[in-house]
Image (tube, rainbow over all chains, first blue to last red; front, top):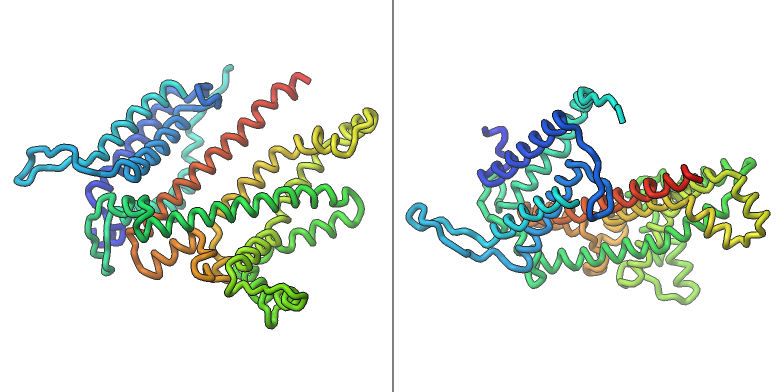
Length: 109
Length: 300
């Protein structure tokens, strides 16, 4: 793994990218099995599943950044894991909001 | 609609995907990794979570203040050059000849600034604007204007904007010209029969026909001006003070000057996100502007 040292991998970023890659793989398989069909939603623009995923991902990034800037990342709970416990940042709420918005986008956009 | 869909063609895109993976995706992933860590060189990294993003989005910190200030400067710069280049480009395109040998001549003359590399444009204007040996700076000072782009902020802005207008108005003009050329003569003849004024012809025929190319021109010019680095860096170096330090200049200062890879990576990602959003909005408007008009044109 020394040859990849310059990429400075960490477990959280690796999980993030693996999740992203899995999402794209699933979307690709879905597109192969059930070809994408354009549809006009609340934004009054024709979107395919891929477009809606793109909008969801962009919106998720914006929601997380806005949360960091406006709300902050204080600890909201501590899970009893290990000796010191595992602190949960309020940023996870932004993740929840993002997931909810993604569901909404896939349904109504 | 019975349309055969054969997704196997996507495999033909694979070589390009691999190439882009090496040139863009892997570096971008590395930037994401950097943005979560701090480093003191030697490939030693320390986890920092979203710390850099917190700092970046808080205007009271050094990083946040610099980011916000340079973002504002960049937005003002982009707005200014768009406000000048788009109308000017349209005017130039309208004034360009439609036939004869002058067409080729005008096209070549207009294309000249576009062919000059950015750093050369910067050097040209850096010398051109100097009050002691530059023609432009010398003349301005000679007629009594106190012009010095090295020490005066307003002069520095004036020079950077003028340089961009000089460099890129041709692009807008050429795009508009291509839009104008695509208008069939019948439209003008119909307007003449109706006794339409010059303004009416422009508003009802030429502007709608230039709509799409104008959107492309605005998108191209916005993206280029929002990512501008070389020209202002060569002319003003971001100064005087920080007055012409645009985001990319600030980014290079943080990444390569201070070697704060974490901060620079966080800034790059937010910068990238802004560009991505603007690009998507423009692209959506562009594709849908055409789609809305198509049925109308088909029905006519």
